[in-house]
Image (cartoon, rainbow, N blue to C red; front, side, top):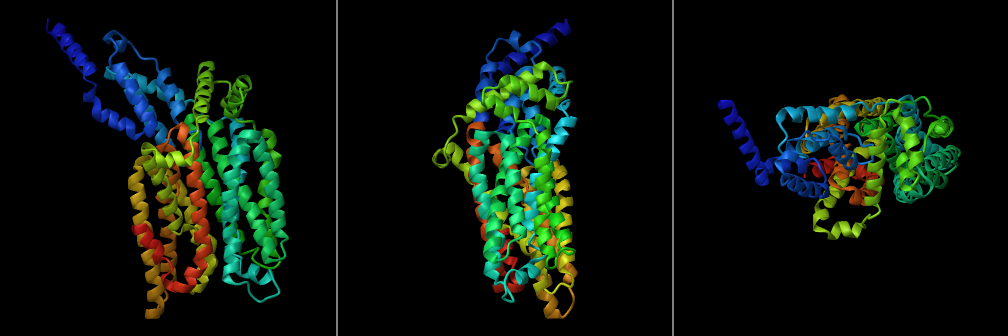
Length: 545
């Protein structure tokens, strides 16, 4: 008799829960936290409708395929550094909120079904080959970002018959790369949709090879500036095409990992350019240094035979059969037909939503979208105005002016810390929230700027050698950037928007990022000349605010 009363009591509690969906407010709040604003509202309506269903429908074991479809539709088709934690949170959110009234024991089984379905999708031999080929573009982007840093003095002496190229001319040569990046990232999306991902990557690799060879034989300031502009156009296209293509070929659980590999390839390219700067930092060795990037772009062109067309692009063109065939090759023979069909269906649904793509003006006028859009723009501005690219563009000259005995060592150490910190950032982003890491990054970079400024001011004043304290300040500065302000702005921008708004919002934020990077590259030499030892205080002020 007691057992029967207990069953009746549990049934009554469940019935009250279904009749009063407001009681689940904290859960819905957690759900919204892990979804875009638009998706959260749609999902909220779906949950309320599910709560009104008869109890016999809720008591039955839910089909794990429904929330799995929601996950496939909600995770952006971009390979973004730090997205792995977002995918895991989405998995828990959809599994726990899709069916009200599910028993706790069934919840655990339900979670495990979704987790198993997602996690069993892993790397295949063909996927590894494709990823390796495409990442040559990311390495080239990092390499050309920093390649002029170490050999700055020798290049400035060799470019003209005059004994020295003035600071403003050199700043234009360095920073015009960002103007090219802005142009490339602007024209890449329509070209990617028109000619396809594979064809764009092939032509972009050929174009970059020719631009790099042109850079290596440039005989004057004007020619080198034009070469840097063309290289920037290609690298700007790569910053759009590579994460997009990797996100479209990767299983949903690997998009964050491939985003990390993309970021890692960039920082490895930066470090490689810094390391080669000393042995090739002579005349005419610097021409070889500037042309080495052609090796990576040529390798990408040669390996294009392994690159397959994006299954998602084929779905957009109505070629569903071909898309399913290539998806089977990328996923391996173990992939079930049902899961392949779900992926194709999610690609089709997201593509249909993206056809309703809105304008930047709509993002500004729409009250629901204005705040996240402003947040994305602010994060991109703060990322560049933190001054990180001043380190990668000009650290050798900066250390030389500061009187450090071995500027090359300081530059290479900064590049090494940049690589190591990128890997540590993955663990931090999995364990801590986005806001906490942004605060940690900003505070850490502010303190590092103050340490660096103190060392440069106090050393000459007290007539003591504080060069290694300067290096320590720069290394902390770079490390704290990679912990937060480096990857998080891109991850947050992708997560804040739904499929309809995401492409427009990320494109606009990318343009702001390129413009801010150009301003830092153009103005830093003048700021360094004007402020001397206090050069990094303006960056500390931006970070503090």
